[in-house]
Length: 291
Image (cartoon, rainbow, N blue to C red; front, top):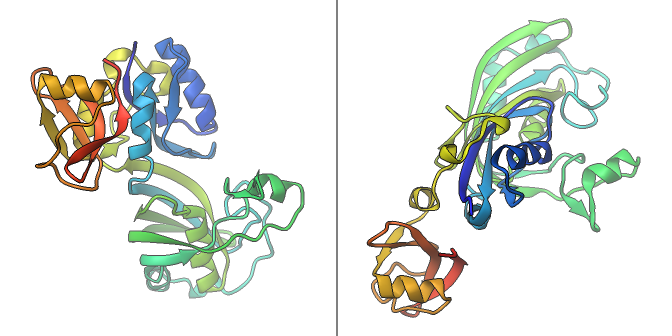
């Protein structure tokens, strides 16, 4: 069975679901999932799990992420991005100097409370918020705590009635870059929204050199052991323990780090046997890998 993790550079205008369909055709297998979606209007890194690799996605999806974005100041939109309807312009753009923009952006670093866009994929009473919003229903989402590790303001370009500003954002999973653009614009008093977004990194994985989904081959996949080494501590197990773990049996784990996911690699083969957790000196299998 084909197995591994694929790093894909998603193109503009296609959905994450479409990328998965392309990868299935390219690799000739149906069992493919992804760790974190990208909107059709966004580009950049999408991490796919192939075969047993889908089981590793749960340990990747919550990783920190890095984005490059373009924020447009001068007016807000109904969706907080370029897909929505423009709201009435307000404020004085001439006051949005590079220094003022940088100062406003600085207020959104660290641990912050963020209200997601009403056109997000968050579920409200079992339905996606964007579906309710498109039906014309009022959607009120609660603020969520997220962490913006760094927010760097780059080059800006003034147009007729707007200013486009480049942003580089390193943040926790669950951070909405659209909401950052909206909120920075609100602080400046001129409104703001997102017009371009590229995801450069998820945890230790970079979009650099990542192929398009249709160009994937089995040789381009990262092995499960290779990926596990990048995202969690590793414990080496002998052949007997490896056999026990493969069959779902707990093993002695007295010397293992406790209460965190660990990659159990077989000493002889170097292959990933399971993702385990040490509890009270015994292992608890979080993810098994068929031999």
